[in-house]
Image 1 (cartoon, rainbow, N blue to C red):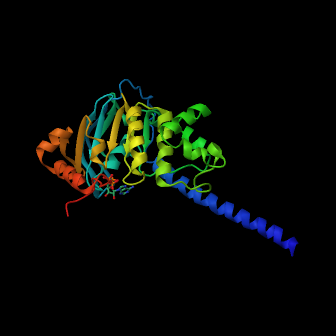
Image 2: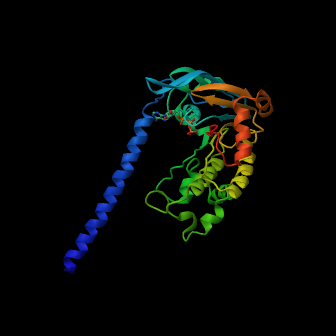
Image 3: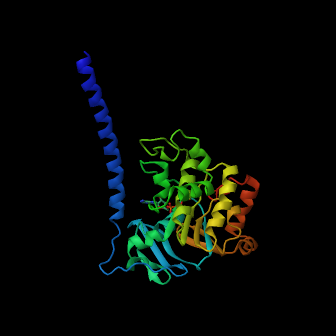
Length: 303
Ligand code: ATP
């Protein structure tokens, strides 16, 4: 019996390995097919970043031809300034961010960084210049250290730890039996939404790019951590060009400009005080969040 048990058990292990690899391959091909939607032109040049001023000029975009998502969006983030986008769920906020990272090409109009159109520069140089803290971070099947160093593989352990401390995730990592060498991702330790986001913040702090995109989570972080991290992010964002997709208006009162999106268009724009004075959609969202507590999202519709 034992003679049969060992090979059968071994087969079981192999079966599970293959099944997991297929899941990973599936994901990889999913990603690759998306990557294939954009391509470097033969004469693409490396992006030359000076101040990192970002401009969207009359940008139109649709994932599917019959369903326009962005309908002529123009905006400017001057070098080193923070611009925030708010608006109901599905209005196109994250799409704006995806286009800046060039996950997709714009349908019409253009996006430039320091005057260079995204379609004219190499994707590698573009992506080196941008750090994204997404709502929902996908971790690689590797160690936590690898996941943090991903944007800067040559980083030393001391630099990785410093970034983790700033993102308030160092203590958590240290509490794990294998510390920074703990395997995470599908095949390793599963992290909570907040822990994953803090790993993403550490990764971005370590990469230290001139442009930051922060897609604020609606709920991933608890409020104590959130306040601490908010302070770190603000420190990290000093003198950087920042696009924030905000759900809590309290985090963007100091923004250079706030854009209110609805159904793929910017319907209001200005500084916090100007928008309150306007008594329009933003003022309405602001008063809802004051009444409804600080965790209310900008998705909140008047009920
Ligand atoms: P939320 O606040 O909920 O994150 P959002 O304003 O960021 O919303 P987007 O994620 O930009 O909204 O989505 C805008 C619209 O585009 C939505 O209607 C969504 O269903 C659609 N959409 C998003 N991604 C895709 C995709 N990959 N394929 C097709 N449609 C998509």
